[in-house]
Length: 157
Image 1 (cartoon, rainbow, N blue to C red):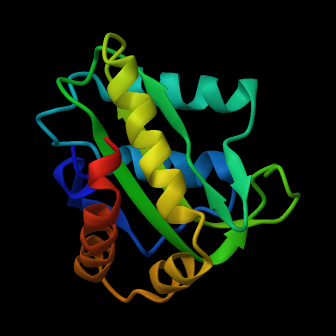
Image 2 (image 1 turned 90 degrees about the vertical axis):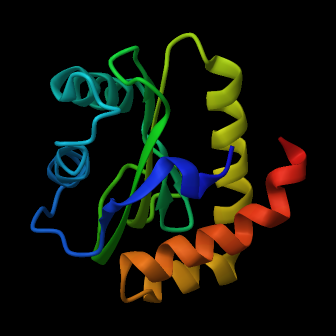
Protein backbone atom coordinates (compact mmCIF):
# COMPACT_ATOMS: atom_id res chain seq x y z
CA UNK A 1 0.00 0.00 0.00
CA UNK A 2 1.26 3.44 -0.94
CA UNK A 3 1.01 6.57 1.19
CA UNK A 4 -0.86 8.39 -1.60
CA UNK A 5 -3.52 5.65 -1.49
CA UNK A 6 -4.45 6.57 2.08
CA UNK A 7 -3.54 10.29 2.20
CA UNK A 8 -6.17 12.42 0.47
CA UNK A 9 -5.66 16.00 -0.65
CA UNK A 10 -8.45 17.20 1.68
CA UNK A 11 -6.55 15.76 4.65
CA UNK A 12 -3.37 17.75 4.06
CA UNK A 13 -3.19 20.97 6.05
CA UNK A 14 -0.69 23.76 5.58
CA UNK A 15 -2.67 26.44 7.41
CA UNK A 16 -3.42 25.95 11.10
CA UNK A 17 -5.17 28.19 13.61
CA UNK A 18 -4.13 26.07 16.62
CA UNK A 19 -0.90 26.66 18.50
CA UNK A 20 -0.89 23.66 20.88
CA UNK A 21 -0.46 19.95 20.30
CA UNK A 22 -4.11 19.15 21.13
CA UNK A 23 -5.55 21.98 19.04
CA UNK A 24 -3.42 21.05 16.01
CA UNK A 25 -4.28 17.36 16.34
CA UNK A 26 -7.97 18.25 16.57
CA UNK A 27 -7.71 20.36 13.41
CA UNK A 28 -6.07 17.43 11.63
CA UNK A 29 -8.72 14.99 12.84
CA UNK A 30 -11.45 17.44 11.77
CA UNK A 31 -10.10 17.16 8.22
CA UNK A 32 -11.53 13.60 8.21
CA UNK A 33 -15.08 14.94 8.56
CA UNK A 34 -16.91 13.88 5.42
CA UNK A 35 -14.42 11.12 4.58
CA UNK A 36 -16.54 8.02 3.95
CA UNK A 37 -13.73 5.82 5.29
CA UNK A 38 -14.18 7.35 8.77
CA UNK A 39 -17.21 5.79 10.45
CA UNK A 40 -17.01 7.68 13.77
CA UNK A 41 -14.91 10.84 13.91
CA UNK A 42 -15.19 11.15 17.70
CA UNK A 43 -13.89 7.62 18.22
CA UNK A 44 -10.93 8.45 15.97
CA UNK A 45 -10.34 11.62 17.99
CA UNK A 46 -10.41 9.67 21.27
CA UNK A 47 -8.02 6.99 19.99
CA UNK A 48 -5.46 9.56 18.78
CA UNK A 49 -5.58 11.82 21.83
CA UNK A 50 -5.52 8.91 24.31
CA UNK A 51 -2.53 7.36 22.50
CA UNK A 52 -0.73 10.69 22.69
CA UNK A 53 -1.30 10.86 26.47
CA UNK A 54 0.48 7.52 26.91
CA UNK A 55 3.62 8.70 25.12
CA UNK A 56 4.36 11.55 22.75
CA UNK A 57 4.67 10.58 19.11
CA UNK A 58 7.08 13.45 18.48
CA UNK A 59 10.00 11.41 17.21
CA UNK A 60 12.46 14.26 16.71
CA UNK A 61 13.87 16.44 13.96
CA UNK A 62 10.67 18.48 13.90
CA UNK A 63 8.51 15.46 13.06
CA UNK A 64 5.64 13.71 14.83
CA UNK A 65 3.67 10.65 13.78
CA UNK A 66 0.52 10.46 15.92
CA UNK A 67 -1.31 7.23 15.26
CA UNK A 68 -3.96 4.88 16.54
CA UNK A 69 -6.06 1.87 15.70
CA UNK A 70 -9.84 1.62 15.68
CA UNK A 71 -12.45 -0.25 13.71
CA UNK A 72 -14.28 3.05 13.33
CA UNK A 73 -12.41 3.43 10.03
CA UNK A 74 -13.28 1.16 7.11
CA UNK A 75 -9.66 1.22 5.96
CA UNK A 76 -6.41 2.97 6.86
CA UNK A 77 -6.58 6.77 6.66
CA UNK A 78 -3.95 9.47 6.98
CA UNK A 79 -3.55 13.19 7.39
CA UNK A 80 -0.51 15.40 7.01
CA UNK A 81 0.21 18.83 8.41
CA UNK A 82 2.89 21.45 7.87
CA UNK A 83 3.09 24.07 10.60
CA UNK A 84 4.65 27.39 9.64
CA UNK A 85 5.18 28.03 13.36
CA UNK A 86 6.49 24.87 15.09
CA UNK A 87 4.72 23.77 18.27
CA UNK A 88 5.79 22.07 21.48
CA UNK A 89 5.04 18.36 21.08
CA UNK A 90 7.05 16.78 23.91
CA UNK A 91 9.24 15.24 21.20
CA UNK A 92 11.98 12.78 22.12
CA UNK A 93 14.68 15.31 21.21
CA UNK A 94 12.93 18.15 23.06
CA UNK A 95 12.54 20.24 19.91
CA UNK A 96 9.29 21.68 18.55
CA UNK A 97 7.44 20.00 15.67
CA UNK A 98 6.49 21.43 12.30
CA UNK A 99 5.64 18.25 10.35
CA UNK A 100 2.89 15.87 11.49
CA UNK A 101 1.80 12.64 9.82
CA UNK A 102 -1.43 11.30 11.35
CA UNK A 103 -2.17 7.61 10.73
CA UNK A 104 -5.30 5.69 11.72
CA UNK A 105 -5.49 1.96 11.04
CA UNK A 106 -7.98 -0.77 11.77
CA UNK A 107 -7.57 -2.78 14.98
CA UNK A 108 -7.35 -6.08 13.10
CA UNK A 109 -4.76 -4.84 10.56
CA UNK A 110 -1.79 -4.44 12.90
CA UNK A 111 0.78 -5.72 10.38
CA UNK A 112 -0.35 -3.25 7.73
CA UNK A 113 -0.30 -0.45 10.33
CA UNK A 114 3.26 -1.26 11.42
CA UNK A 115 4.50 -1.49 7.81
CA UNK A 116 3.02 1.93 7.02
CA UNK A 117 4.52 3.47 10.17
CA UNK A 118 7.88 2.02 9.14
CA UNK A 119 7.65 3.40 5.59
CA UNK A 120 6.64 6.85 6.83
CA UNK A 121 9.51 6.82 9.33
CA UNK A 122 12.07 5.86 6.67
CA UNK A 123 10.92 8.65 4.40
CA UNK A 124 10.71 11.25 7.16
CA UNK A 125 14.13 10.29 8.51
CA UNK A 126 15.68 12.04 5.48
CA UNK A 127 16.48 15.67 6.19
CA UNK A 128 16.12 16.70 2.53
CA UNK A 129 12.60 15.25 2.40
CA UNK A 130 11.57 17.00 5.62
CA UNK A 131 12.89 20.25 4.15
CA UNK A 132 10.97 19.75 0.88
CA UNK A 133 7.76 19.00 2.79
CA UNK A 134 8.21 21.96 5.13
CA UNK A 135 8.69 24.28 2.16
CA UNK A 136 5.81 22.86 0.09
CA UNK A 137 3.21 25.43 -0.91
CA UNK A 138 0.28 23.11 -1.61
CA UNK A 139 -1.26 19.77 -0.80
CA UNK A 140 -0.61 18.69 -4.38
CA UNK A 141 3.10 19.35 -3.95
CA UNK A 142 3.12 17.31 -0.72
CA UNK A 143 1.34 14.40 -2.42
CA UNK A 144 3.89 14.51 -5.24
CA UNK A 145 6.79 14.36 -2.78
CA UNK A 146 5.25 11.35 -1.01
CA UNK A 147 4.48 9.65 -4.33
CA UNK A 148 8.11 10.00 -5.46
CA UNK A 149 9.40 8.66 -2.13
CA UNK A 150 6.84 5.88 -1.94
CA UNK A 151 8.19 4.24 -5.07
CA UNK A 152 11.61 3.89 -3.39
CA UNK A 153 10.18 2.04 -0.38
CA UNK A 154 7.32 0.05 -1.88
CA UNK A 155 9.48 -3.03 -2.40
CA UNK A 156 10.06 -3.16 1.37
CA UNK A 157 6.36 -3.83 2.07
